[in-house]
Structure formats: C-alpha cells, structure tokens
Image (tube, rainbow, N blue to C red; front, side):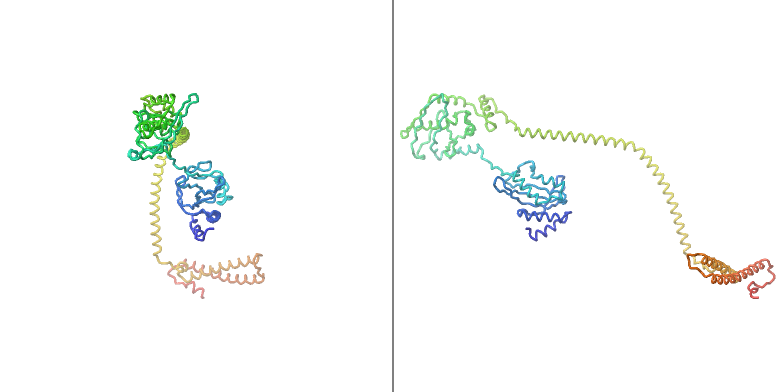
Length: 521
C-alpha cells in the first residue's frame, strides 16, 4: 500500500489533471495491486511534437510463460484528460532485451492492446487495474521481449586462434599429432592404409620435422589438439569444418594444400619421412594407388589462389565460386541481395508512391481552389477601389459635419456659461404688480378660480360612488357659503376693473381719487 508521503505527493502533482480524484483512486489501487510499480513525473513527447509533464507508473509486472515466471518492464503514462483518454503503455526493455514486434507491440515499444482500444469508446467502464491484468494475460500468451542473443565467435577468429606467431612456434615444439581421421572412400574403390603408432617420447626432445616436398604444414581443426605452425591458415581451411565436400586450395601458390580428410594423413606422412631418417624412431606409411591419384589431382588443381569464401552465403554459391576460381583472371561473384531487404524496399517504395500520389492529388485540388480564389480577388479589385473612393468622400463630409458640430457645441457651452454667471431673477417681482390695486385684483381672481375648483370637486364627490359619499345637507351648506364668498369677490373684481377703465379714460390734469380710496369710501 502506498505510504502517506507517496499519497501526499500524488495529490500535489495531480493538480493539472481535470479529473484528479478519479486519477488518484485508480493510481492508488494499481500501486496497491502491483507493488513493483512506482510513480514518477517525466516529460512525454507526443507524436505531433507536443511535450507535457505527465504522471508515469514505471516498473515490472509478473507474467508466466511456459511454466516460467518473468518480469516484464513497462511504463504507463497518464494523460491530462485521463480517464476520458486511455493511458499510454510502453514496454521498456533493458540493455539485455530486444522488443519482439507483434500485432499489439510496435518496434518503438508502444503497446496497442484490445483493452486500450475499447477504452476510447467506453472510458467509464475501464480503469488501470483491469488494464494491468489484461497486459499480464496478453504478455503471457505473446511475450513482448526476448533476451538479446550473445555474440558468437566467428569462424575466422576460431581459425586464427589456431595459428601461432613465428616466435611461439620457434620457441616451443609442436605437440604430438591427433589421431588420424579416416579418408572417406567410395565403396567401389577399396584401399588399404596402415598407420603405425607413434612412440611415446618427450615432445621437448623431439626434433622439428622438415617441410614435406608435396604438402604444406597444416593443422587439425579440433580445438583440443591444435598444432602450431608459422604459416597462416588459408580461407579454404578455415571453412573446411562447414563444407567437407568442397576441394580446397592453398593461399600461397608455391605450396600445395590437401583437403581436410587428408590433412592428418599428409601431416603424418611428413612426420613419418622425418622419423624414418632418424634411427631412434622408425615409422612407415602405406597408401593405395587410388589415394595417390586423388592427391596428385588435388595438387594440380591447387595452383591458383582460392576465392574469398566469406563473401558467399549458401553452399551452392560457394561451390560455384570455387569452380569459377580455376581460371586465373576470374573474380568471385558479388554478394546476392537479401530477399527480405528487397521485399522491404519494394514495400517502402510502394508506400512512398501511394503517399506521393495522394499528396499530389491533394495539392492539385488545393491549387485549383487557390486559383479560383485568386481570380475572385483580382475581379473584386476595381470594386474595392471604387468603394475606397466613396468612403473617402463620405469621410470628408463627416469631417466637415464634425467641425460644424464642434463649433455649435462650443457656442452652446459659452451661452450656458453666460447664463450661469447672471444673477437669479426674483419670482415675486415677475408675478406681482407695481401698484396695490393690481395686486389686489390678482389675488381676487386667484381666489375666485380656487372657489370654482372647490365647488367642482365637491359636486364630483357627491355624484361619484367610488369615493366616500358626502351628505347632501352638508354639501348644500358648504356650497352656499362658497357661493356667497365668491359673489363678494366677483363684485369686488368688477368694481376694480370698472375703476381701472375709468382711470384710463380720464384726462391726466384732473385729480381723481385712487381706486383704493374709492373702495374705502
């Protein structure tokens, strides 16, 4: 179970995630089910070049393959839109592992499991723990990794290890030869061959054998009984353990080399000649005429240098190259191309041609659209120029109207400022007259109009049922009082107007009493 530190760390780094609670729950359950996984944050680069800091669960998951338990290293990247988007699963091989490409594993290591494909269509029914279980089942059936094969030692290095340096061969005598290998003979050509046993003497006291007149010094390809000679091994002898049925030739024209089946015989024969000259070690060698005929035939065919057999791939090619090497001016045939590489090149070429045709068609279509757009743009250029001229004229008119409105606004502001600077006008002087008689007439007219309005509203209150009803007796009593008062006021108004009329028609030299004096009298 994750510790509290890991839990707190997860809650902190899940801030950029939209559904951080669901991500935390699924990651916590996955870590509980698989303790070999550990969370970390690392930058992930998508296929379109975008880079984002994502949460990654890295570690191993156990799988069982053929009754053996293996730990597959994986890395699960959690995108920011998780769980609406599926996680990104990669197989992370170590330096000793190689990715095994399959229908679900890409060469880059990305895994496209069936569970991840169903995640996109129905994300609410998927989570990390079932995904890990599905990956275990998938890897148990089809392992995504296999161990990297160890580099095997090439035949050239094996053969070269058998060839000593001159100093080594001169400092140490050769060990005794290995047991002879019988020469494979045809059933129709019987031959008798006797190999006398070598006496058991000290190798250090044994003299070195002189070179035989017919065969060069060769060594057996048996690793346990390798002899050391100063001459390097030819290419034909290095591959003699692979192609036993091919006749091999010496790399040096002055010497002759016998095949692998006669190697030990020739060596033994040379040693027998040397030892026969020594009285202490008599040896003998008897060969049939058929063997001597084959040896002489091989000696005649070994005058030309052999081709480089390492350039050939199969045995048939090697045989053809050896036959063609009998001519002094012939060269080995070139290495045939790899069929898998040719098929891969053809597939890539077909893919590139398909993509190129699709790109060409799309570019042609876009070019046609762009040409139509260019035609429309060139066609609309005169209309745009005419519209620009009309807009320039409208702009000039608007500028003139704007200047006129600015002058009017400035003038109005000046008038407003002048009115604000004036003194306030007294209202009483505007309403009241300059004489007492006119002031009295104004007041009487106002009171008369007020009495008319009062009688009107009292009559409406009497006849209207929506408002509170007025008693008829009170209404009549009040109206009689108001009528009496109105009569007096109107009578006074008539007298004042009569006096004012008389004042305007009288001559100015006669002194007449004022209307106020007349009213008082």
